[in-house]
Image (cartoon, rainbow, N blue to C red; front, side, top):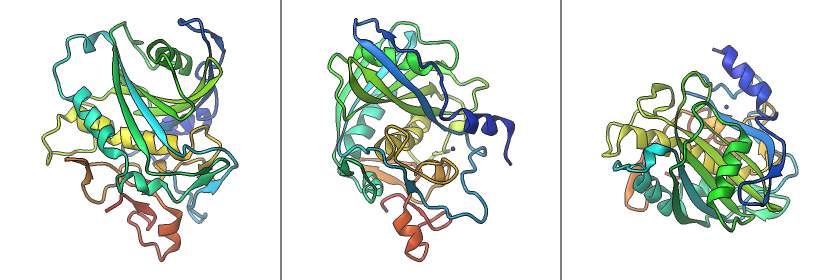
Length: 290
């Protein structure tokens, strides 16, 4: 994020439109998706390393998120009477990630607007019980869901949308993008329902989390880290277009502790670790804060 056709297509489309037309949103505010996305490829399909090339990320001039305010949206009819562990579990994940050594794996990178900090705060979640798309949605559909449910979006806001839409044949587990709501630039992400989805499951039998939660938690860490280091898709990525989390997709080192919970979450690429005698894992460049 074996070169399979689907990943070739994903790579080609990664910076193209999934719905780019700005419109007057449902709230009466102008909503403009950027139309650009970065995808998280399924297990076994991510291959971000070009043989013989420098694997490090390079800076492309854009902003980063100095600090991040997270508010999640759970969208779909099945959330109306939901009694499982995903909403509370993801709330625990986001509540524990701020200040953690895991989120600290992003702080070596700076942008046009300064440095990344470990400051991530969680503002809770909102449940939208209207029907989510039955298939992979456009960026405009997800941004409109954010606009409908977030009354006062902020420029350092990150708004992940967790739907009850199943992945089906889509060649990705999740994605992140950005756009504007009422003139405010915001970051947002989309997540499928990953229950029983082996292609997007980290395989974590050691914890008490449900399979669906553990799958979402791993891709949640991936998208959050990328939204911080490359929020407008013009900051940090390598010569093949892979962001820091893409380069460590489906590689794991040790359990990541966030607050009082332990998670199986992939690491993120560190130029510093790679340059320091390849002191990380997975090609020597991946770190997870342990």
